[in-house]
Length: 341
Image 1: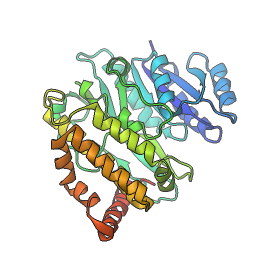
Image 2: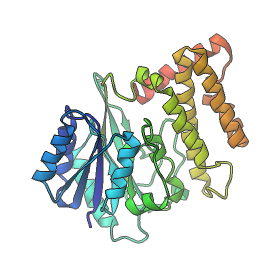
Image 3: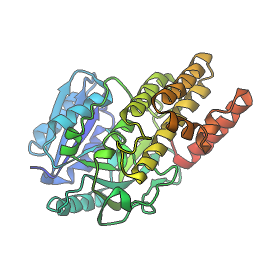
């Protein structure tokens, strides 16, 4: 069995996928690299086959009809043979030195009891043109270099979120938790980083800047104009997160600290959905924002009131044109802090 399976969802990725693959090949025979060609119409399929032929014991090339990022990740999970599983997008890459530490740590954890369900590491926003590269670090929240549970976690701050880039899951856990990412939908990485969390009992944090998250292409899914044009997909993901768990029910999520984190996570997704609707400037999209909040109210009234009257929720729900301007100012401040778009 391989130690780590890494899925690379690829759709028309010929211009940058080689850089991603090269950074991952350093893992050698301990790693399984699954290149999922998601119905590409450029040279992606040929590049995937080229690497699979050259490194037959490390790389698998899988070709499928286009099903979107979620469908490609689902395929990666289904075909993974490694003990642990990670997704690396085709325009991103990993730090070689941190990668070696990750593999060393996973090798040590493979024989540990209890078995670790999720390994977390830092990631770097590689934003085009930015002089300072922002690092998403968790050293203030998680114990370092030890197995721990949610009860051992210090409260994660707002803006300190566990994203797909920072996660390595135990492969069996992903299969057993029943997560099925929707096809033909962007922004499913939010579900990937949210849905399995209540199934995660044992965690490990490695304070390494492992994942390099590239931001800068005009057609990239996190470009603001692109996100506004795909608002319906953002809203779909948002609703699926609302449907996943009733966060006010202690029986579904017994850990108080995990519930607190998941509520903050849902809150930031609600804020993103809301501000995109506001910035679109259309009455139709503003009504979709109101519909989203009503949807949450129907599903979980207690969480609705907690989020709506929280600091971020109040900012997103101020009435009138002046309220929307304040919301946009808050969003611009968040842009500078987080580095998105």
